[in-house]
Image 1 (cartoon, each protein chain N blue to C red):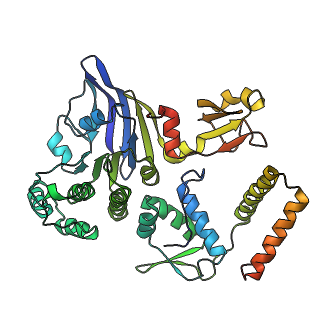
Image 2 (cartoon, rainbow over the protein chains, first blue to last red; image 1 turned 60 degrees about the horizontal axis):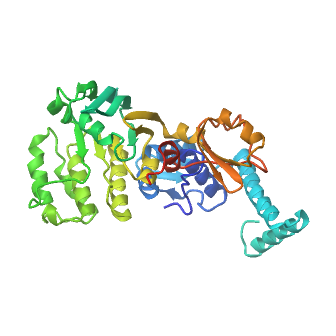
Image 3 (cartoon, rainbow over the protein chains, first blue to last red; image 1 turned 60 degrees about the vertical axis):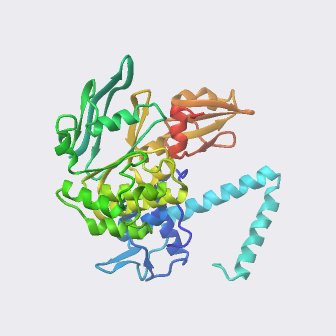
Length: 133
Length: 290
């Protein structure tokens, strides 16, 4: 099983795209190492309880993008030097997270300057824990 | 080629019309889910599909053969799992497999045994002594053993607990991975269906009110929440609402004409827009069963 790859039924994105972007994200963040094996189409479909054709579509697109590598008769692997997360996906994820956080601050009546301080603190504590900087 | 073609299917019981001019197709390799509340006409449709019932008008074609006229030939390449599967209660799974094998041109007995082993179901216990989940698994195994081109499942997980339900879907997913069998299923388990079906049809009062790819369906349906009397309320009609309800100080509408690229009512501080699951879309269209 790929760590923390989840399908969200209420997500407006099609399932194959959720898988595609999910794996892209896990590879870019280092949660799945370069060169590591990924589950077969069949195993991932069973794990997520979805149609194998859906997984296959996502894997095909990831292979075309150079993120995954199919070794014939062996299995599917993360490429040795996978490309970075496409800029538009990174931007969108950041913007989505920022909107959620800002929304929370507004709901709680926290002014902008104070909310930004919390963000900096969170950043600092993550770095001290040795997470990605 | 379409493995199922339903054309203008109409079924009447006395004066009551159970199916009213229903038409749709299931292409080779597709997974089609037929949804509907109890009494919507699903059972009548499945009976016609399997050639068990003669329609008042229209016809159903299975692998290019008319189901009612050529039932036996049409069904040789079709695997069927009925709602609450039945078999002689004294027969064991092994006996059932041996009994069914000569009825089909192909029979994968080893595959059948392997499937039961995978789910820990004994082959030498009488069918009547198995649990509901185990019976469903045996029925699915018997349906898959002839390596059918088409699988027809009539609510295969009805009355099963979540673990047994998952086991049925896992087996189905495994078969889709191995052979890409075309599947037609009815189900109450919309969460389970959502991941594996490519296309869904919704029956309501005998009519097919929807027949669409699940991906496009989920793209055009949204829940929109806004304050009454504002601009959003004025432009709501453009989004083709299917259900509108007031929730406290706000209005909540499920709309069917959403377009992410050109939202008629842009999401913002006063307008919340969220996507829906297949189950939520279904409930908005046909109403809550309660």
